[in-house]
Length: 209
Image (cartoon, rainbow, N blue to C red; front, top):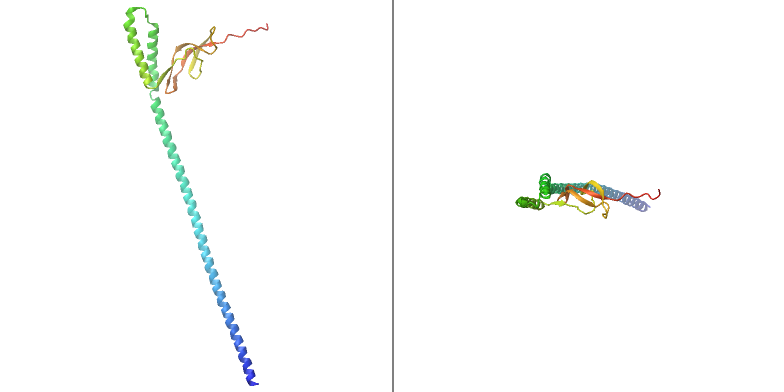
C-alpha cells in the first residue's frame, strides 16, 4: 500500500511539473508573439513614415517641375514679344520719315502735271523733275513703301478716302473715277489713304406717281 501511495504522489508531481512547463512555454511563446507584433508594428510605422516622405518628395518634385515649365513658358513669351517688337520697330521705323517724303513726291507729281510740256524751253526742267521723281520712287520702293493708285478700281474704304461722289454714265457705282492724291503703304501697313472721287448710282425714279 505504501508503494502504491508513493507512486500516485510521484505521478501527481510529474503532472504538475508538466503543466507548469507547458504554462511557462505558452507564456514564452506569447511573449515572443507580442515582441514580434511590436516589431511588426514598429516596422509598419517606419514603412508609413517612408511612404509619407516619398509622397511628399513626389509632390515637391511635381510642384517644382510645374514651376520650371511655367517659368520656361514665360521666358519664351518674353523672347517672342521682344522679337516681335524688334521686327515692328525695324519695319516701321521709317514711317514718319516716309510720310514727310510723300509731300515731296506729291509736289513733283503736281509739277509734272502742271508744267507746259509743249514748251521746248521746259524740256530740261521736265527731264530733271522726272529723274528726281523716279529716283525718289525707287528709293521708297527699296524700303517697301508702295504707292496706292486705285484709278478705275472698286472703292475700298480700308485703303481709300472718298472726297466726293459723282454720277458717271457707263461706270458702275463705287468705282474710283479720279485720284486726287495717291495713298501709300509701308510693309503692307497703310500710312496714307488714297484721296479719291467715287462714282455713285443714279437716283431711282419713282414710277408710282
